[in-house]
Amino acid sequence: MAAVINTNMASLQAQNQLSRTTASLNNTIQQLSSGLRVSSAADDASGYGVSKNMDSVINGSMVAIRNANDGISFSQTATGALDSLSNILSRMRELSTQASNEANGVTNVDLLQTEFKASQDELTRILAATTFNGVSTFSASSRSFQIGSGTSANDSISLTTTALGAVTDAADAGKLINGGSGSIPGTDIVNAIDTASLVSGATGASIRAAAVTAVYASTLSDADKDTAATEINTLTGTAVDASAAELKAKIGTIDADGGFTIGTSAVTALSTASTTAATNAQSATDTIDLAIAAVNTESATHGAFQNRMAFITSNLSNLIQTTSAAKSRIVDTDFAAQTAQLSKYQILQQAGTAMLAQANQMGSNVLTLLK
Image 1: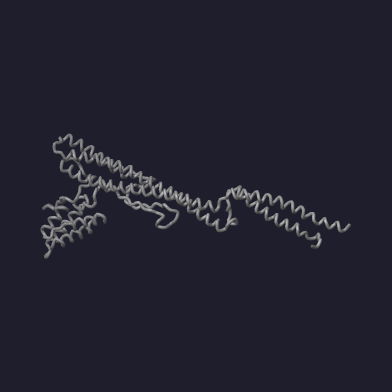
Image 2 (image 1 turned 60 degrees about the vertical axis):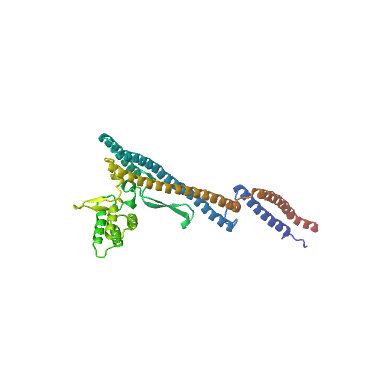
């Protein structure tokens, strides 16, 4: 090998190796000081991108858990009010049952009606006043709850609630062909029945069809129309007179003066029910039973929703745990491995520094040739 002094190859090699060792040592120190194996895209481009996607899933799932808990709180607010409604309705039923007994004196009847009316007012107040974050819990609507980190249909669920204001107005829309609002639309339906029965060749089926047509032309809600039509079509009379009579018995009749009398399928509205007479109290009892059924149905809806939300939060918690573990395997520092690397690179750096010093002295050996 030629003896030269302008180019010290040994020194260059030592410098190059020492530079690599120092870079590796610096990287190890950074990982140990930050706790992260991947702190920038330069450390691991693909791993960095994957970890950021996992971050969005984890953070989104954390928000989804809060959303689910809000949904549970919303439903629990409604459930608490439903418990109160159930208790009030049970007391009202006691009052109506007591008032159905004609042995009550005038004073007792007045006292019963006073408490009955107060209970009606409280029902209305609770239904109007129960809200969660300013949102009514008893309005008829379908509310969406975001319970996932994405935007697919599986990332949200809906809670469909009933307009329980109907408890005070109707109790059971299915049996309110008259709507509990006077002679309309009951009068129109009965007139349609009478008109159809006079048509030549009329049958029980044609009369029922005329009644259904009148129902769908009435002011009843769409849901009430469907239920009323179903009830009408369950009648089995085939003879014209029998069918008309059967329908009128359920819907109502019109007297000579045009007055309308509600039939057996029309229920007095709970908001106008009273215990002022035994017959009124008996009608109120029927209406209260329907209202209790409506409240129980709504309670079951909310109970099922709360259980579903509990399952959702549990699943989201598991998703966060497993995704966090996967992210950790990508970006977190393995301290056991990196401390071993730290010792290795520290020794290599010390050795490299010593060898560089030796290499830098090699040029001085040429001086011996000049003596």
